[in-house]
Length: 64
Length: 219
Image (cartoon, rainbow over all chains, first blue to last red; front, side):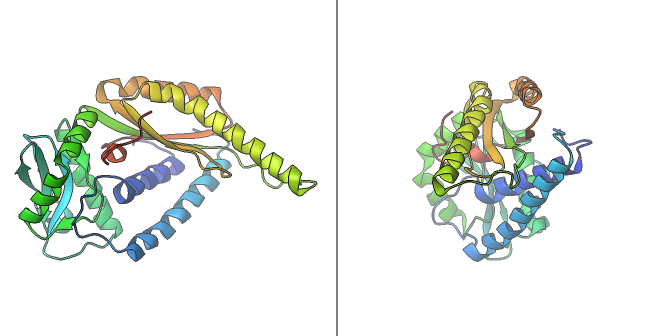
C-alpha cells in the first residue's frame, strides 16, 4: 500500500509507524526501559507531525 | 544487553536482516514462545529516528516470515538470557493467548479527520456553548460508530479511541486475517465514498502492535 502515496498519506503512515513502535507492543516487566523524558521529546515531534498532516489534508479538499 | 524485537510462535524463522547497531538477530526458545533478540553493546537505547525505524524494520520482517508474532515495544532490553526467560515465563499463559489471537493476522490502522468548523459559531451564553459542544460530541461519536462497527465486524479484534472536541473523529486499529485484507480495504473505500467530507487514512498492513499487549479490547 505504500507506492505513489500523496505526501499527507506518507506523513500519516510515518505517524502510525512511530506511534506503534513507541506506544504499542508487548512490554515485559523487569526490562530496561526508556526514560520518560526521552519519550516526551519524541512526542513533541509527533504532535508537530500530526498538526502538519491535518493542515495538508484540509488543503486537499477531501482527497482520501 | 539483549534487545527484544518480538515474541513469536516456534519454530521461528529469523529473517536475514540486521537490527539496531547493525547487529544480527538471534532466536531464544522459551518453551512455547520464541524471543527474537539482538545483542547490543550498550545499556540503553535512545529513541532516535534511526533506531525507531530499525526496530520497525526488524519487526516487519519477523512478522512477514512467521505466522504468529507479537511485536515488542521500542527500547526494551534485558541484561541477559535468564532475565529475559524469567520475564517471559512470568506471563507465558497470557502471551500464548495473545499469539493465538494474532495468528495469521495483520493490523490495519484507521484515522478519520473531519474538516474543522473554524470559528463560525459564537455561542450566546455559557449554556448554549455547552449544549453546542455536547451536540458536537454526540455527532462525532455517532459518526465514529457508523464507520467503526462495520469494519470491526470484519476484524478478529479491534481497538478504537475517539478524541472528543478535536478534528480527529476516530483513531482505530483492526486485527484482520491476512487473506481478507482486500475485503477490509474495499469496505474502507466504500465507507469513504459515503462520507466525502471526511479524510479517511487507512494504513498498513502493520505487524499486530496494537494487539500484542495482554488483553486488547475486543470489538
